[in-house]
Image (cartoon, rainbow over all chains, first blue to last red; front, top):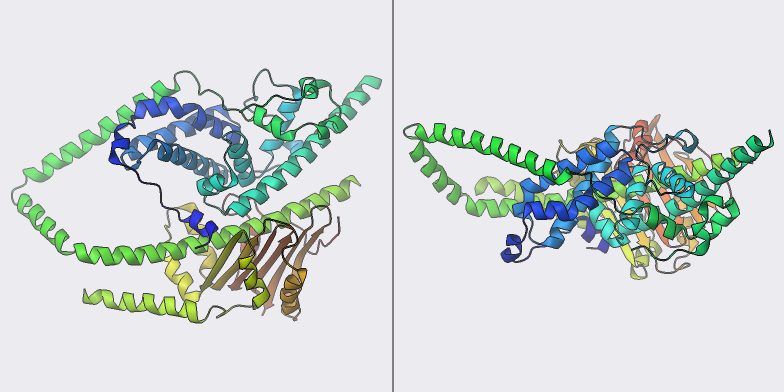
Amino acid sequence: MTPALANFAKPLPLSAAADRAGLEFSGLLRQHQAMVFSIALRFLRDRSAAEDLAQEVFLQLHHTLDSLASAEHVTFWLRRVTSHRCLDAVRRKRPETVPLEDSPEPAAPARERDGMLEARLWQAIGSLPAAPRMIVVLHYQEELTAEEIAQTLTMPAATVRSHLRRSLLLLREKLTRMTESKLKQESTGGSQ
Amino acid sequence: MNPELPQQELRRNEMTAPEIADISLDALLRRTLQREDAPAGFAERVLAEATRRQAGASSASASARRRTFAMPGLRFAAAAAVLVAASVGVRYHAEQQERAQGEAARNKVMLALRITSNKLHQVQMHVSQMSTDDSTN
Amino acid sequence: MFHKLPLKIATAVLAATSIALPAGAQDIKFPVSLENLAAKAKETVDVTLDGPMLKWASKFMDKDKEDDAEAKRIIQNLKGIYVRSYEFEKEGEYSLSVVEEIRSQLQGPVWQHMVGVRSKKEGDNADVYVKMENGQVNGLVVIAADPHELTIVNLVGLIDPDQISGLSGEFGIPKMTGKPHAQKGK
């Protein structure tokens, strides 16, 4: 089977039952809550929706924990389930993309200390289509490689790389355009 | 996780468009997309909900079990069911193999449709980019 | 045990069919030079599924899962899905003559060139062709060629026109709303 197909149907790793004893739910919850919540928040851009989604992911983990064999497996499982639930949530709310100019300000501002440039980048990321947006989040927040993202999202690594390449081009272009139009507005406002 | 940023990024609020082109988009993305803590009390809320759901599920299944095994004769039926289950064990193995082949075919279909979908989407992105360029020129 | 036999025979026949007739209902013939690219490629995807195989696969799709249900709907009238995708480490590892060889098979009156994209900046080329027969879309070919990747997709069979735009809207990707014949250098 080719690597891409192998990724597509890769069985989840199994390890010794001894590992299982170390998988205690409340510990895992505390360890991974920031990861799960942040993936959902960066993708959905809605703090309350992200919290709801993260809660459902952990409740599913609670139900499934017995079938997970190692700590690595739990991390992989959490990223995978969170990503798929995020994509499903957006799919149910179609149409999901709006022209950048019309896109609303993020419901959850990136962080208070963020500058204007980061806020614009945050807005530009939000305007990306669902799959490329999730790939950008997984790559930059979780620092996953294209191959790891491919496994997480069940898509070929080549597709991940191509989405990432295009998304970066688009983000740079949008960021430049947004800044130019902001500067133009400021100079017009300033001259009046 | 968060590499040192070039000095010019520190004054990002004053930057002009050409300057933006020079900064590392990579570093900016890493900083913008850092993990954020879950809201206060999140873990406690999840634990409480998990306990509540588990309690609900186990009391429902325990009462179902009590009702079932209280009925005379059902214990024998259950034992017979176990025997039948054992007798179909070999058949189960063959079915599993067939299922695995079917799942592999399904996975191939999904992969093919994802690739098709992705390529059509890329064409769409190009076309919309061209339309944007046309309208700005 | 006996009642399992027909299923086993069916499985064997399906498997044999897919091996013996790789280009069964295929609209286009993949040239040998295309298939040979697997040896040079860093990553290869090779999907060859004919009608019976598609029907068999659809039995294993879960109607409660959104992606599965959509896939089942898309493939129900298809006679085949053929995909070749090659990703290369370096640029220039394949010749554009391979692409031309495929394009030349799509010159007939039944084929309509729906969209063509030529991007000089990124070196990307993409074409979407549909096969029109009796006022119905009876096939789809996508050719996507960029410096590091070459992908050819051929869906054979009746495709609802909504599905062509809808297909780009499935699997977490927004719908396709591009203008036809948007061929242009960038």
